Length: 90
Image (tube, rainbow, N blue to C red; front, side):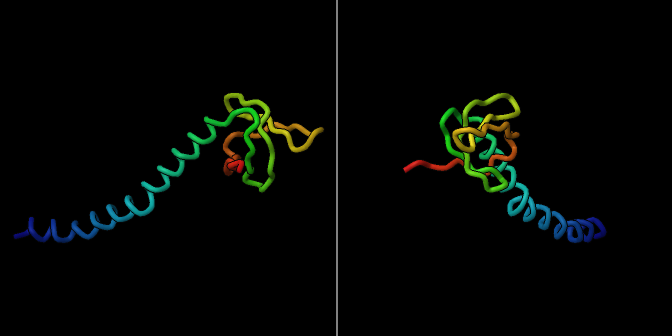
């Protein structure tokens, strides 16, 4: 009888953790994986938007940084984690 009460009291906690996993943790992991794949696939000439909202063009990629061109004269190094998205040219 006591063992049945124990499982009945634990069941709501297990259900809450399952809901949190499928609604919060799993989508964040998928989004991080997709972002890493997008950043790893960047190449010369790709147009990107930084997390600061700056539109620039990729010139060169390294392990942790990418060199981007803001205009004809200004080139800067950007940490890969600050790439927000890649612009699709149409």
